[in-house]
Length: 243
Image (cartoon, rainbow, N blue to C red; front, side, top):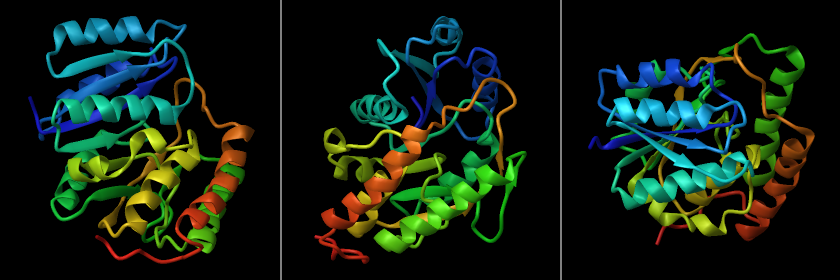
């Protein structure tokens, strides 16, 4: 077993999963892969099982229904902690996140508790997004900073690496959010308690196959979640002293 686990949530990703699995398993750094499939009607789960039968580094966790990205990751986190992985990644299956960036995350994680992949650290590195989507993402980051004080350029990003100790410090079952706000909430819980969070620059490319899962409900949840996080932090916009 490798020290690193890449959690890849899937829902209707039959076109992308075989190519993504191949890329991950050929990385120069050794990784295991956990596919968390939400009972995809297009047969993604079956494809994942077939890949797992061929590759011992690839594992599959089947869930009965689609009930949000956050719940899929929580299921994956619990599995990873049970199996004693040290470095645990969140990563999309649609190639918007480049597998070749993973060694950079692992290097940064040697001296951090959480590594965030940032599309905006030192400039904008987003390909094939419409201007409206880009502006929504940038304004979301500014909004999160204004309310919570978190000093990160890309708090809604979904490409990240947790150290085992960081996930153990989060009360995973108490995490309330599910969409973009899930990413914000996990980062805020660690940041406000004094854990070391760093950013590494990444290039984000809009998916080619399949369709985006972004919805108005996801945006609305994120809008209100930051206020709840601010209240949880005692209406502070700074880090608590780590116990």
